[in-house]
Image (tube, rainbow, N blue to C red; front, side, top):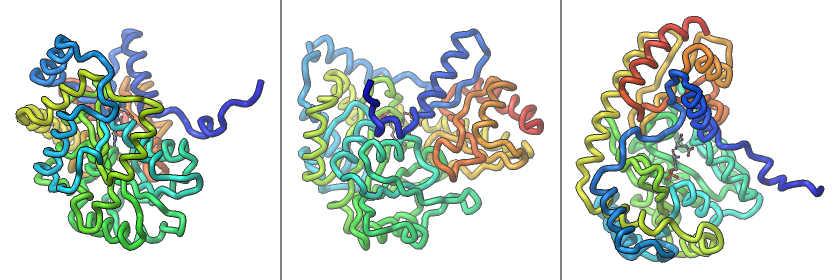
Amino acid sequence: MKPLSTIVQSVPPSPTTMMMQRGRELKAAGKDVISLAGGEPDFDTPRHIIEAGYAAIEAGDTHYPPSFGTPALLDAIVAKLKRENGVHHITPAGIMVTPGAKWALFATLAALVEPGDEVMILDPSWVSYAPMTMLHQAVPVRVPLSAGDHFQVTADLLERYVTPNTKVLMVNSPNNPTGRVLSRAEIDALVHVATTHDLYVISDEIYEHILFEGHVHYSLAAEPGMAERTVIVNGFSKAYAMTGWRLGWLAGPEPIARLARIYQTHSAQSAASFTMAAGVAALNGPQTCVKEMVAIYDQRRRLVSDAFEEIPGLECTPVEGAFYVFPRFTATKKNSLEITQALIDEGLIVGTPGSAFGPAGEGHVRFSIAERTADLEKMVDRMAKIVPRL
Ligand code: PMP
Ligand code: GLU
């Protein structure tokens, strides 16, 4: 037989997806497992959003929808960008609704890169950024951030990694996995580097509403000189607890959206029809549900961070946003894969190894705090016993 695709074989399967599956299998085998590997709200989708989805199905909204999003959803996204993000230049033609933000990222990269282009990725970063880049035959260039200085981003650091081939900078704030929210100074640094070196920016804002302790989310597309070079990627999975609906979107300059749209017509075609009505209800409806969920994530963040602080051998940077804790295991020689395995073997706690997020994540394990508080309480008790023995 002829060899299979070397391009696809060059990337591993998504470690978060695989670890989520591991948790499901242990649960199915009757184990008292605590599954914290996936970033998935434990809350059900808010009622008014579910009802909008039902109503759409009942009304016969089960046919092919417009490939790039219904007019109502495109308008809701335009209004949301103005209202919440201070982004006033996006038109419906600059938007594409997608089956999940993951696909929006993939389609954006498809629209931007050619083989050999370099894509700058802040390390650690979400597990799929580098593989997505490689699947488009572009080259991920990791900019190592350090837990020691709270994963700070500076212009000097970024500029050390810019080459004549650098084309795209991928940014995610609030950040998965570090929990960092980019400060005003860091946003200024990113804007400086992107505009000086004529880079496109993919700004993954999927955790924008999940902020703690007064941290503020700045949308890069609203910054001076950024409108023509920034594609915002966002979705409904996290803020509205809609992971299974598979609904996301990209918004940016029309020439980029035009290419992403070509790509979608030959691949995913569209998001599912009735999910778009649910998306309109989410964006245009009351936002109290989001605030209520964030308040509970905040309590859980404190619970886990306070407990981890008492465990010798664990070091955590403060969780400013998103819903992950990302402790560093400082008193063991084991690498993050071995630590993750030991936590499963000895405590039935499933996390995601830090190395899955890049070399700068080595020594860390990521745990989602978007899980039931009772499970998190059990997890910290088990960790207190296991960590000293690692
Ligand atoms: N970006 C980041 C940083 C994420 O954590 C996720 C969650 N998987 C996504 C994008 C994609 O989300 P979804 O495809 O569920 O909309
Ligand atoms: N965003 C989640 C995570 O990082 C879900 C899994 C995934 O899509 O990777 O765990």
